[in-house]
Image 1 (cartoon, rainbow, N blue to C red):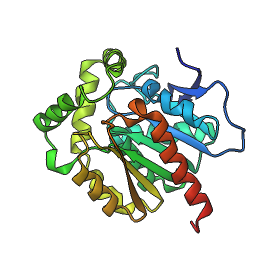
Image 2 (image 1 turned 135 degrees about the vertical axis):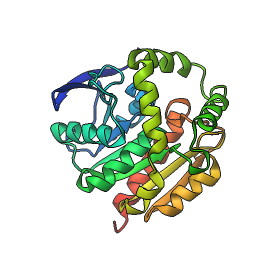
Image 3 (image 1 turned 90 degrees about the horizontal axis):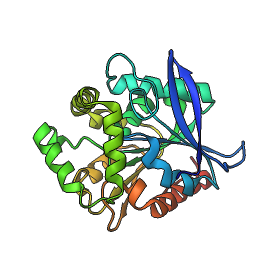
Length: 256
């Protein structure tokens, strides 16, 4: 099904799984790390991975407790998942990589970029959570239910299988950690170029919140993908990949 291969790395005693393209770019090319959202795994990042692979070294890890990665005894909070991602990046030699996150993955990236700035060269926050105007279980569940029919229907079985693999308890506790995490407090300290991407039909990350995220970032810019929903990385991977490439190439040519 997937034109990827699996790579396993032991981080703090846990085996972490990552997907990489079968036909990867050259060793000296820039590295891009795709960070999945809540409960899901790196599997739904594969469409974007495949479209970036001819130009960059692209990795889609499964964070501990999710996908094929080993489960820690307890669910990790945002900082715990960020620490695991940092350990995995160091083991893989990916310091200074571009991190691309969807949804909850953006919260992990923001935490990592602030606490370990040397690991993150640039960042792409796609459909970032949590909107402070809807920081409650009923509001977030309501937005998620609205997003289901707007995203690609083929994403549903992927999400369902990843949810079963993670387990209800871990999923719920991670969701609660995500709700308590205040990404808006970290954004002003992300002193790197950051691209914010929003699907125009995304109810989880509304336009007002995407614009606020961009304003809070010292070097933020916003791209809206017309007609796309929350998982732009899965439903509109070609346009998402083009936006990422334009962002990276403009930064490479610019003064920063």
